[in-house]
Length: 439
Ligand SMILES: *[C@@H]1O[C@H](CO)[C@@H](O)[C@H](O)[C@H]1NC(C)=O
Ligand SMILES: *[C@@H]1O[C@H](CO)[C@@H](O)[C@H](O)[C@H]1NC(C)=O
Ligand SMILES: *[C@@H]1O[C@H](CO)[C@@H](O)[C@H](O)[C@H]1NC(C)=O
Ligand SMILES: *[C@@H]1O[C@H](CO)[C@@H](O)[C@H](O)[C@H]1NC(C)=O
Ligand SMILES: *[C@@H]1O[C@H](CO)[C@@H](O)[C@H](O)[C@H]1NC(C)=O
Ligand SMILES: *[C@@H]1O[C@H](CO)[C@@H](O)[C@H](O)[C@H]1NC(C)=O
Image (cartoon, rainbow, N blue to C red; front, side, top):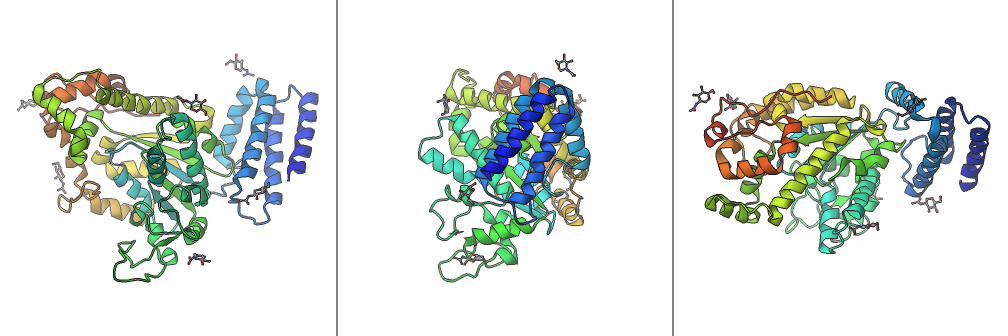
């Protein structure tokens, strides 16, 4: 394989030297690379999972683009057009990979369901990076955000290619023969609880069932991978990716056709919701609200500022439409989904290029029109428009003010209105949401 690359590489270097000024070249070289792929993979499926090979492929691509770099700036744009319109430069064979990026308490479980409920053609994973975060935090290696972000990206990349092995290393206890009873929230993924992925329950007495809809034993990751490969589209929800730009190599992987949906929410609402959901962690905030005094140099407040800044910076990267993200990024506000769930779901599906299935539509109808059935902090069964505004009555005004000071630029970018007094905060007929389109 390596010699093949070398030959291709030498040919291309020669061509570069000969035709240095030609814009056609970059496109040509891409085609060459792509023609190599089926030969290397005896299966017709583009989903070969050898990341080493992929690594060298990417490296070659990168080298080439550097070589051609000087006259690439407008040809690159043309290439993007073709990539999007014809799909010619992607090997995903029409397969779409949706990455739902969010932070906690933004309704991401709910929005994740839009895709989880799509039906038989969707392979959906709920927070697989939970394992990675937990293990690295336990090993206290997580202090280096750069390293962590790289690991997150690599695990996501493998999962989109239906390769669970990088994730396996982070599952605790370590899976035996690729079988684990401990996959986080397995039951939140339809595809992991389907008949074909459901292994028999052996010890019935103490075994807790691993799926709600079926009595399934521990998860066989080999079966999960097979199921994944058989599905047309893949979606992953995560609240753990901090910076969108750390994902660039994922979006540039020619085997994938990634669409990123960033889900945001009013930071005041997020704080209010966290104070309820993670009550013990937010004792300090409650104490501050009582005192009416918030020390803004406190670590807690700094963390809030950091979170807001990261969300904003990711959105700024996405909205600035760099070539690697062009037409692959969509910003969605939770509040808009709560007001117009069906319309927003339709928009999201249109953006991903996946047909909006009757099953997904049906699920959204069922879950946005009822006031009853709300239970548990991760519940997705809520009257969404009512739910979205509840925080205005639960957040102490002092804390709303702190968020406005600390997260001001983020709120402005997303169109969340500031309030100057408690009356406005608690007056439902005053909207805190600017109508805003993000394109
Ligand atoms: C990936 O390919 C390399 C050679 O290119 C080989 O040594 C390695 O075993 C392969 N890994 C897997 C997981 O197939
Ligand atoms: C490339 O980009 C530079 C800077 O943006 C611009 O001045 C130049 O005209 C571009 N070249 C082409 C061929 O479009
Ligand atoms: C994190 O790790 C990278 C690579 O090992 C290193 O370049 C960087 O300086 C580290 N950052 C911190 C804050 O330790
Ligand atoms: C998991 O599934 C694979 C594929 O069907 C099978 O070969 C393997 O034996 C299963 N593993 C266990 C431990 O049952
Ligand atoms: C959901 O809540 C909103 C706001 O309180 C209310 O207007 C609407 O009637 C509720 N919908 C249903 C179906 O209960
Ligand atoms: C709420 O705001 C509306 C519109 O500004 C105003 O007419 C109304 O009096 C306010 N209600 C209360 C209770 O302040």
